[in-house]
Length: 86
View 1 (cartoon, rainbow, N blue to C red):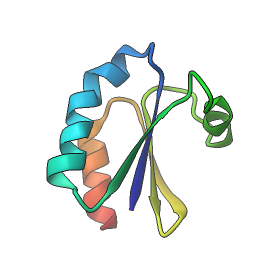
View 2: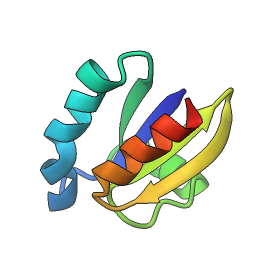
View 3: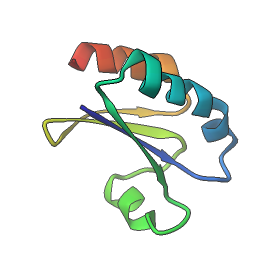
């Protein structure tokens, strides 16, 4: 499973959840690959491709397919989605 976090360096909400996301990646879900995608720079088209309009946006992929999207700083919802999909 892959969790892609689409963020902007200028988003205070992204900064707000950064430590919690790091904890999820290292402690709670070590078998899940977490990607941080800063769409301010070279990845703007990737954000458009995945219809990212708000930050942060978490997109969960399983077996290469997009299976769930969580919009906003909703870390508990992301955790619940990961558990359900594992």
